[in-house]
Image 1 (spheres, chains in turn purple, cyan):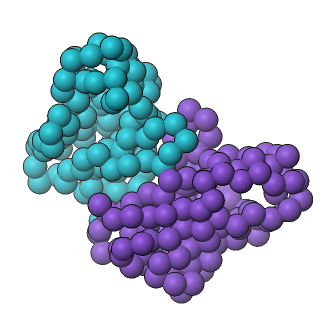
Image 2 (spheres, rainbow over the protein chains, first blue to last red):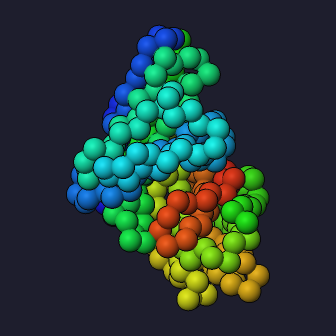
Length: 115
Length: 111
């Protein structure tokens, strides 16, 4: 299958700072990227969907000013957690799809810890 | 309408046994049903997927059975191995749009 690279795999930041997570499709053009959040022993919760060159569509209850998503190219999307707080600590996962009904491939995930 | 219900929540199987995980959906517009395997600290990896025009798909030790009338699909892992111990998620989507995930099944295969 296609490769989606997510970076960093782990990050620890201080409360009040911002953290950027990158998601890259290495061998295909990702017209659509999805960002998920996963709590321990729970399922994936979709945060937002982004299409290249367009504003992201956020799920209900997700603060768009706190979780900034940029999808400026067909191979890169970024999620920035602004003014992070301990409750933002979680496992964040991206997935990328070539669109048109093509399957989505997942990144390795990023473990964010806010101290 | 968007829910996918998965069971059991956890499953313990002996090495060499068959692991069976079930999912049920409500939205008849779903047309893509993948299964993902996730190891701790890693992202989900696609195992196998099926579309509603077939009732069964097999890839190696993994088989999906699909019952369109009952709106159910299941994953069978034959000859289960300790290395199969992971969390498994079923999912469903419409024409490649956002995936709706089941709650997950934690599988433990004892040696």
